Length: 202
Image (cartoon, rainbow, N blue to C red):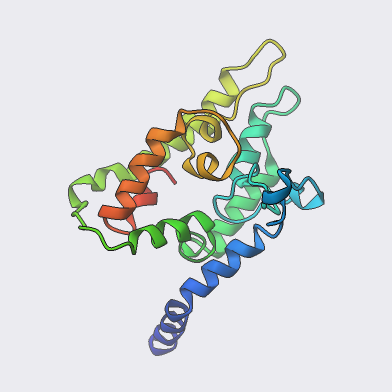
């Protein structure tokens, strides 16, 4: 069994870049929208894709699970999304970190950044920051959209609007707040361990 697992692992590792590229293309099929200046708003946007993939990207063919979850939590009509929660649990049980390593477009982009030949620095001392993602999930994704609401009872998607670097570089948002977060993340990808640049916030 161990030899079979090693064989499968080696095959997957060999074609990992192609798998990531294919997953990125499948979740962003509507490339002509970059020229048209519009968003795809068809039935595919009612389905969540695995991985971080901004809903506001012109090419996006599906919905980001984090963005969709925030939209429901911050809604005045609903307080909890069983569909999205169940979707995330199912993928977590079946695929685990495979999503981050093979299916997430943002993870692939960061790995490409890491391959740029620059001086690489050790990130061992920053290992405690890997727990920061749980605080981000609790505060930015769940609590703030649910508690800080406007006059009609709707909350902002705080993670997407203020922190998500994916939304900054691929969505058409004019908000300047994600710029520092994106800058730190790009620096981590260029100069740090290739795994460290996304584990701090997702």
